[in-house]
Amino acid sequence: MASDQQIDMFGDGLSATVSEDFDAEQIPTSASVPIPSGVYDDLNRLKAHCDRCHRCELGETRTKAVVSRGNPNADILIVGEGPGQNEDETGLPFVGKAGQLLEKILASVKLDSEQEVYICNIVKCRPPNNRTPTTQEMDACRPYLLEQIRMVDPKIILLTGASSVKGLIGDKRGITKIRGTWMEWENRLCMPIFHPAYLLRNQSRQKGSPKWLMWQDIQEVRAKYDELRGAASSN
Ligand code: SF4
Image 1 (cartoon, helix red, strand yellow):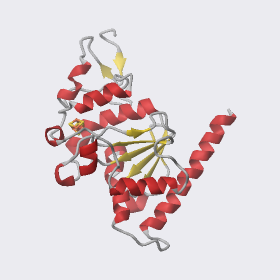
Image 2 (image 1 turned 30 degrees about the vertical axis):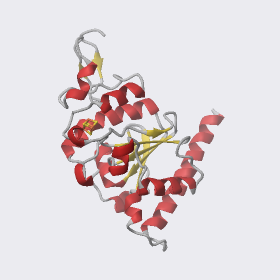
Image 3 (image 1 turned 180 degrees about the vertical axis):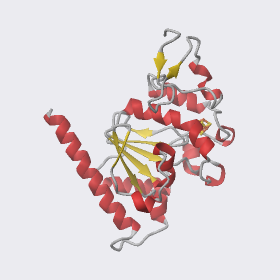
């Protein structure tokens, strides 16, 4: 790479000069090292960096970094907040009770979580006692997520819960206000939805309840997915 080559350092359209001696192997060592857009050429290398990452304090207490599961060629990418205990132990996102409910939600509209969906998190390492990740932790980890999104290149991004919305697109509004709404971010279609863990705490299925609203939202996602795939196959 030429020493004055311009590349997108922050994944947000800003560009900066990266010197010829930029060493990507330093990325996991400190949040002060940028993660330039396009620095990873495959997801395995990104995972290897996350596995040994100490860009934030969560790297001190994790058992396993939780990078993704599902199909890296999927058209739907789901973003969670961060790993819980089950995820920390297995290294896989959404495998606890909330994950089982997510499976049911996807299956209700015949979406296969291994084939048609790629699942990842804002932060890859478990926050102690399942606390909400801090802004600093999300900022340190977000560039990995931006690279995952760039490489998977999904048609639809589903953001589960307010932290995922805030962590990826910076929208701080409450999830009840914005769930079920299509948003455009970086030329991609995003929809905030309730986090499955929230649905576990709100079991009512009555009209207007969180579970009922999720059922409306996932049907809308399925319809948009079919529409986009139909449009792609007719081109
Ligand atoms: S949460 Fe992200 S930034 Fe922090 S140590 Fe884990 S992989 Fe690195």
